[in-house]
Amino acid sequence: MAAMACTSAASTALSTPRLAAVKPARSARPVHLTSAFHGQSVASVSQVAGFESSGVKYRSAGRRAVVVCKAADGQTVVIGLAADSGCGKSTFMRRLTSVFGGAASPPKGGNPDSNTLISDTTTVICLDDYHSLDRYGRKEKAVTALDPKANNFDLMYEQVKALKEGKSVEKPIYNHVTGLLDAPETIHPPKILVIEGLHPMFDERVRELLDFSIYLDISDDVKFAWKIQRDMAERGHSLESIKASIAARKPDFDAYIDPQKQYADVVIQVLPTQLIPDDNEGKVLRVRMVMKEGVPFFEPVYLFDEGSTISWIPCGRKLTCSYPGIKFFYGPDTYYGNEVSVLEMDGQFDKLDELIYVESHLSNISTKFYGEITQQMLKHADFPGSNNGTGLFQTICGLKIRSVYERILANQKNAATLQSAKA
Image 1 (cartoon, rainbow, N blue to C red):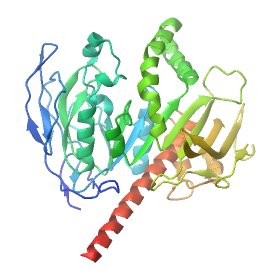
Image 2 (cartoon, rainbow, N blue to C red; image 1 turned 45 degrees about the horizontal axis):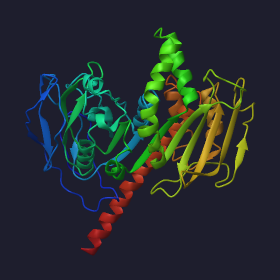
Image 3 (cartoon, rainbow, N blue to C red; image 1 turned 45 degrees about the vertical axis):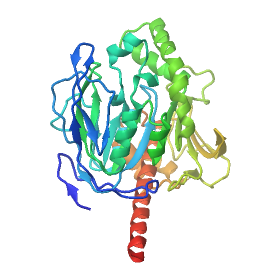
Image 4 (cartoon, rainbow, N blue to C red; image 1 turned 90 degrees about the vertical axis):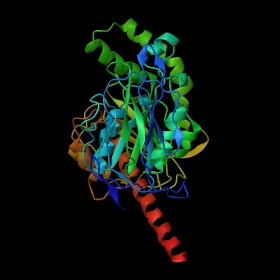
């Protein structure tokens, strides 16, 4: 496919089985709207591929939009990652983009406060960019960023759909430093688009555009332990203020964020360990990867024997681990009425290079060569969770996403060959 020259590494978009026809890419056409927002002038909003994106108000930052990746004919594979704030989405994105090759970095030459990350193959969009209210607007209306009323799902749907179909968009930027909405930046369709944030599976229209979806499910006990460790030790917050902050977010989280996990193809659950009675520190974790059966182009990972129920304590001579040790579990289950396979790890590693022992007992892991999981884990040994199941399962999930992408690509090539033969 012929690619269009822009500022990042070349990408080639492709069609997915959920959309029948491949449409040629068209350039974005800017349309200027005028309005007032907290006394500030409003920046331009774009009209992309024939639809007008309205209702979003910006505080203009005076910065120019920037082309952040190369466009190409065809359609883009779309991955959705949902989680609450502070639950490891950024670390997961770094592991995922590493699997595809090349480190993810912000767009060059554009808004320094852009949330977009690009690599050779992927573009990662933060869905905070679709806030319809800035920090001050949310305060005035007494709503949190988790509330759907603070987000523009129409624009989110229009732009994800356009990118999937190979069309460029002018995406807003939510500035996490100032709390304002900055001028848009130009996004061209990459091979793989990852949309990450609070609401990738909330809106049914957006959900239908996803080719694969993941939900990071951090238990309340672990969230509380993590927040205490961070905010009390590093930021000097009181225990009472931490409890108040968590309590203020919980109703909206329970109402709008948590229910999305029922739609995810993979859920990574992070829970307190069962190896230490009454543990409340959250340092040793039990992590479960819940994998939905029957997802197109995806086969769940299994331990030893597919479909069996297995509890495994690895040999201490082959896998070094201090107290309380390591325990694995694998077996079938049901989750929100769906048949799933569950792989669980409780405990943590002492020596990452010995992870090859565990890797050799796992199947359907979609590696390109023996030891690829171990290599990826060693490569990012300084990332949070690299000594426990969060890092292991995020890495495996990244490999599975790569496999899903490659199988979609192969399927499209086969369909094109068959269509040519019929013509």
